Image (cartoon, rainbow, N blue to C red):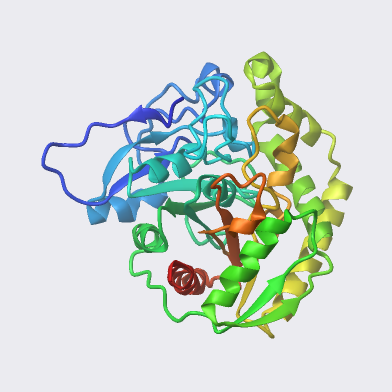
Length: 382
């Protein structure tokens, strides 16, 4: 089981934060394989990158040590994080469990201590889902805040780059590399509890409620009536954009694609412009719902995933992993996934697995997400 696709030599005696990046983020002198045989056969994953991706400028200036490029779900297009070509990174809670995707290696490397911070990408939950599966912290940044130049495009209207780390302090350090001068700022005091979407495992819902109670925040119940509609709409937009970005691989290299990725790309070919326009209108209405909610509360809180990390042998679980994350990508706002403990009375499935609390903040308020997560992290550790 492989966490790295390419490990990089670090000069002897080098100091500085250890940074690893998902293998769709260009590093000068190193190929970006995108975890895909088809991508490599097309010549895209065999040529060394000429320059670093734009998002690495701050890391280079800060003297971060780039320790390697990380495994992932092929073409960043899957929530389970499995990879039939490069192997599947090992979930620290069990070889039989999915690590979450698509930034699977990014979550596993920080969980294992192989890097202090990892960079992943999040288009429908691809930072937050592996963070939840592996018990680490992950931040989906505001869309457009981190430059995407030098990063393989999946769905450009949804793609974001964000850090993963073992704790929130590590996320802050990662954001300092991505956005020099970044500082968490003030934490929330009034939080909206969002619930009632999809079939959330009762143990996860209870863990979220317990974590919020530990913070002593004022917690207000909030309904987002268009949440599920926005999830479906964002999924259609993502499929349409992904086909536009990568559908060309089906011609001449389709037999080299994993079956799940090929099926998703083919499905995207059937999404019409009219459906996309209607989907964008639905997402815009959801943004208005969020704006109204943020006039009442500072942060929205809900589970990151509705289920615990499922077995690799359950491929149908993929659709359940992103039911609570994807609509947030449609809205473009930041969201942070924080591991939280599950009560002893939960029984059954948990077997030591954590749940994950998702903190959603207004557009551009990545600092508020981090500051509030620091408070929650400290509260549940008491």
